[in-house]
Image (cartoon, rainbow over all chains, first blue to last red; front, side):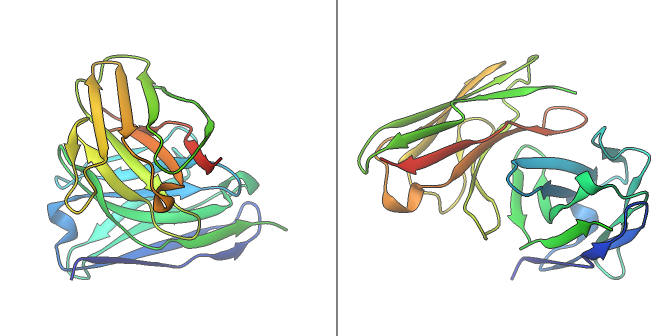
Amino acid sequence: EVQLVESGGGLVQPGGSLRLSCAASGFGVSTKYMNWVRQAPGKGLEWVSIIYSGGITDYADAVKGRFSISRDNSDNAVYLQMNSLRAEDTALYYCARATYGVGMDVWGQGTAVTVSS
Amino acid sequence: AIQMTQSPASLSASVGDRVTITCRASQGIRNDLGWYQHKSGKAPRLLIYGATRLQDGVPSRFSGSGSGTEFTLTISSLQPEDFATYYCLQDYTYQWTFGQGTKVEIK
């Protein structure tokens, strides 16, 4: 079964760091475009970051320079390292698989991040 | 980054109504656009990809049209399970972007 399971969310103080994990099953993370998408309370979906099958990465301006996406092919997982966290990073973070020309066809259930003192 | 302007922000409709949601891109994106349905507490769901292609398992009452800068999602006959928030997403170029969302509510 194709599945994504996120973990690593929690409460962190402003300026702190957190590392989110996305464990994949049923396919290899290196064969797809893996994304992080977030939804802040009361807000819409916001695309955060992508790691392409070739390894190229990209980020939304709001997180560029603070967040870093990576993957471990042996663990078949994708990670989001979040540094210098701000209150506005508070959100439910989803991991989503995408394929060229198809979009995000598989999503996890999300992991919640709260940035507060 | 490409801006995606979605309208309306919300709408009220009855079961059986035809519903149309529009998304406009700030520059041409060919047909690299998807539509997603999101219900509170659940993961988003891909409905349409490539602007017009129906994702496997999605009911045929959902359809997409458009290319370039103007795109439309149509629900031909709204069903109770369709009340949700809908988003467009461009995956044409760097920094993919979502529209602001359209909340479809029961009239």
